[in-house]
Every structure is written in structure tokens, then in C-alpha cells.
Length: 165
Image 1 (tube, one colour):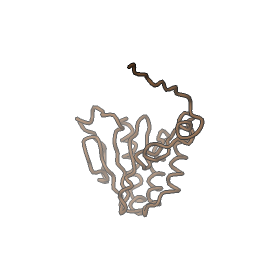
Image 2 (cartoon, one colour; image 1 turned 135 degrees about the vertical axis):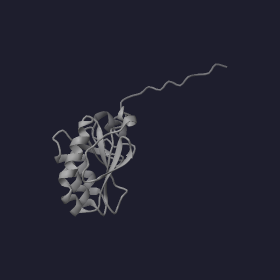
Image 3 (cartoon, one colour; image 1 turned 90 degrees about the vertical axis):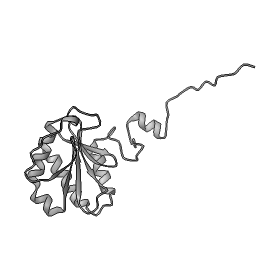
């Protein structure tokens, strides 16, 4: 008895997630966060922030403005269900799991870079960074008052970090 192979002909989707993915409009990632394809990424972050229910929402908006204001080359999007920042590569993501302080994780993107072994040197006279690995650090800011006081130091760290990318 011969077996038959089932032939499946793939046709473009006209509705549903596959159609939106192919058009680049209204794409939603597997994690449920809006994709940056199809619309400017800042609009995705704006929409995300409007819906965000977080006790430090105002402070998160403030750190977002500070980071974006550090350089005209910085863009943003949603990555890991949180506001994330990039130039030529992703470099910082807000840690939304923290509810008692604002935390920003500074990293070097998805791919391992050479300084993952050698380490990164960032001038941090305000001691805002705690190092999680040789190429990853966390900035913790207690509240809006600390954000205002440390604004210049935050900008210096962001500018130094993006020079590495």
C-alpha cells in the first residue's frame, strides 16, 4: 500500500495575525508587547506607557525623557515588556518588576561583545551603577527627587554607554 503525502499550499493571509505581520501593521510580539515594525517605536512606547499600571509611572516617564534627551541618536521601543533604548544596538531597558525604585539595566544588546570578557569602564562618580556582570550594570534611583538631583550624572552615563556600541 502506497503512502500519500499531503500537499499544503501556503497562501498569503488576508486577516488575522499573519496578515498583520506581513503588512507590518499592528504586529504584536509573542510576549504581547507591540512591535516597532509598522509604527514609530516611540508611539509604541507611548501606548504602552498609557496602559502601564505601575506605582512609579511618573518616575519611569522621567527616566525615559532623560535617556532620550541624552542624545538625538537614541530611539526607543518595547523589549521584554518594558521600555527599552537603542542606538545602533539595544543598550538599556527599564526594569518594571521593581515597584519601590526605578531601575534601568544597561546592557550591550543581544549578541555577546568582546568586552563581555574584558569588562566595560564607565565613569560613575555619583555611584549610580551596580555591576551585574562585566558588560551589564543596573542603575537604581529611589524616587523623583533623586532623578532630578542625578539628572546630569545619568546623562553622562548614558552618553558614555552609547559610545561603546
